Image 1 (cartoon, one colour):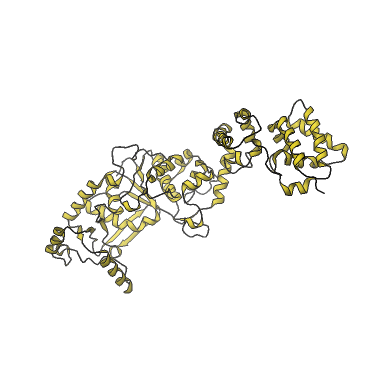
Image 2: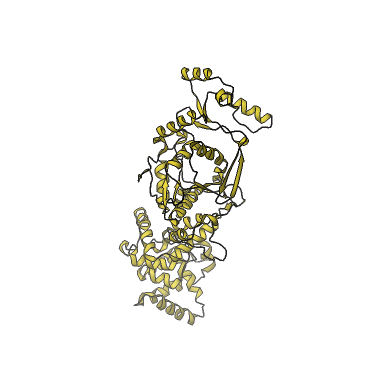
Length: 502
C-alpha cells in the first residue's frame, strides 16, 4: 500500500433514502480522497435482495450529487474496477468462497432456522454469548461431522450456507485511525455466514473481496461496523491480502444523546432538501458532526473547497456528535446572507414562476419576475428569511396582493381617523414624481408633524395595508420596491376592507 494512490468508497445498500449519517460517511470519504488527490468511488451493496427498494440506487446517487459529492467511479460512470453493483459480481464471490473451502477456512452448514434459534435460546439461558455450535464443522477441520454426512447432504440438494471457521485462541488486533489500537478475542467471534442459501454472499464477505479487488486504501465508515472488523481481518489473513487502513466514525446523536433516529426528527437527506435547505449548509453542517479544524480556529462556515483543504481524519473525534438543528438553521442563514444576489435570483425565479401558475398577481408579471425586481426584494429580505424559498413564500406581498390583514395589528394600530389619514396621504404619494424611499419618508414626516402625530401613527397602518402583516423590512424601501401604482391600489383596498375600531 506504500505509495499507492488513495482510494476511498461509499457503499450504500439500495434499501430506501439516504440517511444523514450515510451522507456524512460519503462526505468524509470524499473529502479525504480529494485532500490526498485520490479517488472516491460509489459501490452499491445489494446482496440482501429482500430489502432492495426500486429506484433507491438512483435516489442515493442523485442526493449525493445534489450535495456536490460526485464519484470518480460508480455504477453510472463505470471505471476500471467494475461492476460496481454487488449482485453483478456473484461469480467473483463464488470463486473466492471455493478457495476458502479448499483451504479449510470455510465449511458447509445445513442447520435449519429452527435448529439455530433453539441453540441460540439455549445459550442465552446458560448466560453464554450466542454463537453457532459448529455442529456441521468437518472432522478434518477439528469438528465432529464425518465427510460422508456432508457429501450426502450435498447430493440431496437441500439448502445450506457456507460459514467461515474462526481460529481458536487467537487475538485479532488492528489500529483504527480515529480510535487507536483495538483488540478482539476470537472466542467472541462467531463462525459467520459467507454465502447464503440463495447463492448471494453476506455483506461481510462481499465487502472484503470488493474492497481488496477495487484497491481501496482506506475504509471510512460508521462506528456500528467496528464489531465487524475482526471478521474482515480474518478474511484478509486467509487470502493473504494486506488490509486497508480503517477509521470508524462516531455515532450521530439526538439532543438527549440517544442514537439519531426518525422518531425524534428527520433523518433522510431528501427531507431536508424538500424543506429548502441548501447543499452548502447541509454539507457544512454534516462536516462538523464529528470533525473540527482544531484549537484556535474561529471559522464555522466552510465551502466544499475549504473543507477539502482542511479536512483530516486525525481531527475526527471519538465521542458521539449531537445533531443540532438550530446550528443547521444558523448556517443556512449565513449562506443566504453571503450568497451572490444573482445566484439567489436564479434560485427563486423558478419558484415564483411556479407560484404564478397557481395564482394571479395584479402586478405586471414581466416586472416582478425581472432580475432587477427580484434583486431588490432579495436585498430587503436577506436578513429576514431562513430559506431561499422564503424570498417568495415569506415575502409574498412583493408579488401578490394581501389576502388578509393582521387582526391583532389592526386592533393595536388603527385609530378612529386612521383611514382618513391614509386616504389623505394617498394624494401626497400620488403627486410624487420620484417614488423613492427618501422622498416617501420626507413626505410622511412633513404630513404628520402639523397634525401633532408621530410618524408611527402612519408607518404601521401603511405597512399593514401594503403587506397585510405588521413586520418586515424598512417600510420606505418596501414601498419603493412595490412601486407607486401598487402602493396606492393597496392603500385604497385596505381602507375599504379594514373597519375602523369602535
